[in-house]
Amino acid sequence: MPAEVDPGLAALSDQLVLVAVLCYAVAMIGYALDLAFARTVEVSPDGTGAEAASEAEPALAAVGGPAGTGEAATAASGAAPGDVRDGAAVETAAGTGAGDAAAGSGAVSGADGAPSGWVLRAGPAAVALSWLGLVLNAGALLTRGLAAGRWPWGNMYEFVVAMCLAAMGAFLLMQLRYPVRFLGAFVTAASALGLGFAVHSLHVDAAPAMVALNSYWIAIHVSAAIIASGLFIVAGACGVIFLIRHDAADHLPSRQELERVAHRAIVIGFPIWTFAVIAGALWADKAWGRYWGWDPKEIWAFITWIVYAGYLHARATAGWKGRAAMIVQLVAFACLLFNLIGVNIFIGGLHSYAEVP
Image (cartoon, rainbow, N blue to C red; front, side):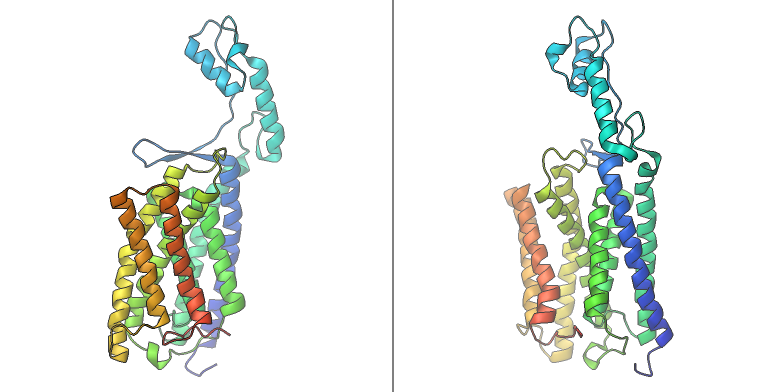
């Protein structure tokens, strides 16, 4: 390890990454429990939505009550409309349904069919672990940068660690404003896998920046690319859920809500990615004397920009919504991933700074 590098801080950075992986993994389990057993998503007419704990309470029609009440009770109990006669309450079907729910949920629900207390606490605990993992992830990057005396995204290992930080940060900040906790299981899974992949396959020892990267432009260009990538990961997670969601999956958010969250993330991330592409061209002019040289990294960054621009344009002008729009944004997300992994690992060029071991 070079003398300029602080080995203690470098080791601390590696340890913080491992603990962050653990936090994200445990948080993923908590989000999954919350999504499967404890919460449903209610979307309000204005599109903001609200999350509420789901409760399996039997609905009974009062004897002699209004016809609407009897019909609602019949629908809630699962009995056919013809089973309600002379205003009598349909108690048998409701009781059977409650019993089946309690038997099927096992330890995750109480005697009345409502989720058990520990299941209801899984969601808030997962959020707390996500914030802890975010702090540890940021600490790993900070100590890595201090150890090497430079910005901590000078190779692919550091870029992936930073991109996982950006994805979790984007998700947690969006959660402060919008009811998007349903994304937690997917974003934490992606972040845990990304950090695990970085540690297992991409890790290199901390070292001073190579001459080509020793510029203030790395703080401008790469930082913008990392932030935009984190937002695009959130949008990509929504797209994957959208395509695999079944109509009967009531515990998952509606397709309209998934599309709304993905669009918000892309609307924020696209200008940042545009800035990253422009900043990269300015850095290329300063470093190599030209703004554009058809380098593979430049080409795929531009292709990614074109596909995301096509998604926004089609949605705004042609009215593309639903599956077609989601497929377009997932194609853009695939271009983003290829730009990160395929170009850095399999294709050479002036941007080949991945330092993959």
